[in-house]
Picture (spheres, protein in one colour):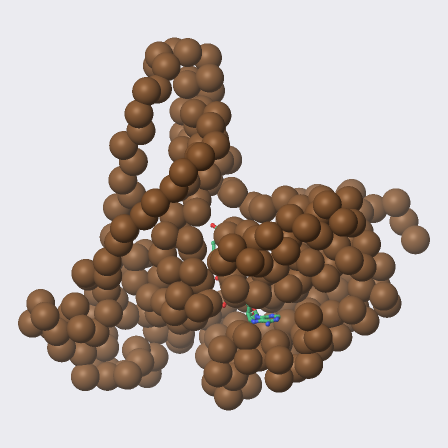
Length: 285
Ligand SMILES: NC(=O)c1ccc[n+]([C@@H]2O[C@H](COP(=O)([O-])OP(=O)(O)OC[C@H]3O[C@@H](n4cnc5c(N)ncnc54)[C@H](O)[C@@H]3O)[C@@H](O)[C@H]2O)c1
């Protein structure tokens, strides 16, 4: 075995692409990707096809029920978790129990019990977890922290932070699994986790008490109808009437959408939710 750090990735959706490229291209001198795991064979195959196109060997693929087997057979040092948010803790915890460190996509998890279980596991196993708050590395945001820490803008006494979502990007959060709280924890967890992280990081602070209020007043059928907008179609892809709809996204527009989503529909539409998926494939955690 080489002395490169070995990574296995669970959750081969669109976000996985960033990690696949980083490990197999940008940092290939020191890192090696050794396996894929997902509930979708189509998506794992798509990533393997990308690797082969770039002259790399395809990787072994494992359904979710064989996560343990993947670790036992491919000996990763590090597991990258880029599954649906509400399933992160399952893989974070199990990977650590099996001796791996973990890099997880944000949010770390979506509920308090899972959060406590993760911290217990870190303590019990001594393993390391990193949650990828990539916004910190946007040059303007990195610079803002520097300006604050160097005292150039003075000592922040209070922070008033707003984040505007435009129609197109905002709609991303209401299209698929993201829109259901049971999968994503809701927008304040799924999306705002970045922003809470940024503010804490900028001013070098941790919150002591937190409360939140919110309401869904723009996205969703009910809100659209209250504004007098009507969308008679159930989906956008292949629907002529949806062309020109500012919320529309067609899975035929990009090769990556087609490869990861449209072509996987037959396989994944039968799955009710990621939790059901996990149970149906026999996850035992
Ligand atoms: N840091 C960022 O800026 C950023 C941006 C986009 C997404 N994300 C995060 O990345 C993660 C993935 O998002 P995405 O946009 O790639 O979603 P996606 O739907 O494209 O991919 C999720 C993948 O997880 C798989 N999956 C679902 N349930 C599973 C289970 N029980 N076991 C194993 N695999 C399962 C799906 O088949 C799919 O391939 C999410 O946690 C999301 O919050 C982070």
